[in-house]
Amino acid sequence: MHTTASRPPTARFWPGLLLAAALAGIAMALGSAFPLIGGAVIGIVLGIVLTTVFPPTPRFVPGIAFAAKHVLQASVVLLGFGLNLGQVARTGLHSLAVTLVTLGVAFLSAWAMGRWLKVSGKLTALIGVGTAICGGSAIAAAAPILKPEEHETAYAISTIFLFNVAAVLLFPTLGHLLGLSDTGFGLWAGTAINDTSSVVAAGYQYSQVAGDYATIIKLTRATLIVPVCLALVAWQAWRHQREGGGGFRLLPSFPWFILWFLAASAARSAGAVPAAALPDLHDLAEFLIVAALTAIGLSAQLRRMAAAGPRPILLGLGVWAAVALASLLVQVGTGQI
Image (cartoon, rainbow, N blue to C red; front, side):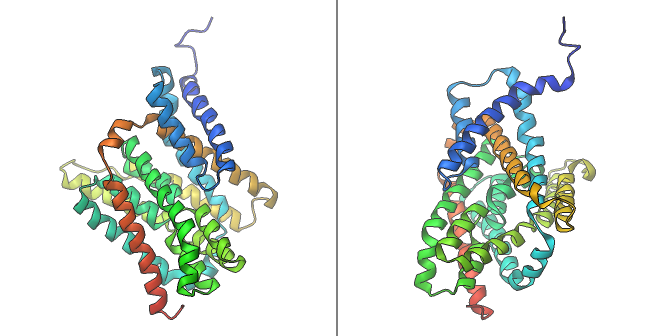
């Protein structure tokens, strides 16, 4: 007979992990059927609906919390296998000016509009990071550093998703109206649309060349999650000191999983990972990120999300519009279109 004391410490995580994994499997299947929405958003929605209608009992809580933090970090590490640093370096110089300007515009506009709309600092930062870099993946990388409330992470993902859909529907039509070349549209889509899947969808609607170029630009932009995460650690330290929190311990707050993300990218770039394994690693990364975001949905409080009202969505709209316009203006200014 096994007593609670004799059970391994990890046993308490299994109920919550299995619940998150089961819902993630459903979300992945639905995401394949409705790719414009995607498994990550469906997972969050499933988690929120379940926890609202049938709140999980306390035995599920440890595993849900573990998935929301540690599985989330593991998914970001696995995403590193999708980046070929050599290809990123070759493309990066051409798109560097546009990428850096749009990054700066995203954070400045998020900061200014967040203060004006009175959106919480962490939710503002999550929306800014998601818009600036790579949507849900960037939010997943930033969340362990910022330590927002679960409802803030869920709201940020939902806001980013809304404008991903808008971009897929609007960008190709706008690109044709503006007379953008294939590479010009690819650069615009790759620097101004948030999520990789949405970049791919919009790019290939425009043309094969635009889709190929937009995808490479987007992967280049994704590498900026590393310096951005380090900057967020510094920002957290500054806030801690300003609020009189005493000595800030850097090592426990350092995003070590980002270094593993770089190691995974370096291994892929050096050819140390068999090419045949890359699709499986991508699928595993996608499943883990859906499971982690589902766990965040299970932890979210719908009433607190509703209490925030439309202000975070207005913030997302303003930042998204500012980034899209800035990308076009830099291309015009540098003679690329």
